[in-house]
Length: 292
Image 1 (tube, one colour):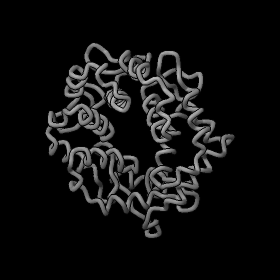
Image 2 (cartoon, helix red, strand yellow):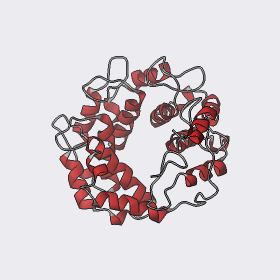
Image 3 (cartoon, helix red, strand yellow):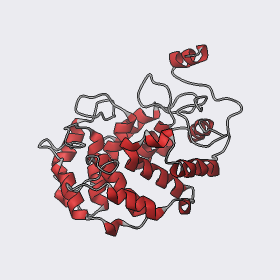
């Protein structure tokens, strides 16, 4: 690590280079995604097989937001996603991989974007999700048994999109989420776990889907999120950590759900996001100066 990097780590923030982009380079990012999709023999593409279906959703959603979804091969993508379905009703990250709630949700979302939801068996997917709910209301991500509040959001979102929320034990799931609600206003992965921006997004999102958002103190949670903003404008995931561009989403989306977008400096946050762009090839780094 360079001396400048050590200083950034010590003060838990970064400086924005004067030469940083001052606007969103949408076309450059669309080109980056399009090239990534085309070059299936690249090292980066091959090494991402273990999360392929989720990666497809991220790319498709980004192209949809930039109004360039027509550059993606809808027929090829839909066929690939459908090939990841398993006999248990869930979807794995790639053909032949075990089912997981994360990839099942991404598969459903991708198929919805391409108006292909009629090509799947909604009932079997919802039953797969139901099979992973535990007696305490929590959800395992897959048969390995890992419990995490992320998987509650995945379960609620998947079944909600497919019209199958009624198959889940919603009261027990909400009670589990509330046991993960900390006195500082945040949520952790499990009861007693440290609050984290990503987990807050998952928990407030899940509670919103089932109409239980008023079970929490919105202002207290929003204040915890607002304190994630650093002087640089960037946001971190938890106290004493460097800002990371991904938390622009986790924090801002959570504040939007809570109706508290005015709790952070949006102008400073956008400047940080712009500074994380690779203005040569497209794409984003975690923070300014980390593009390569």
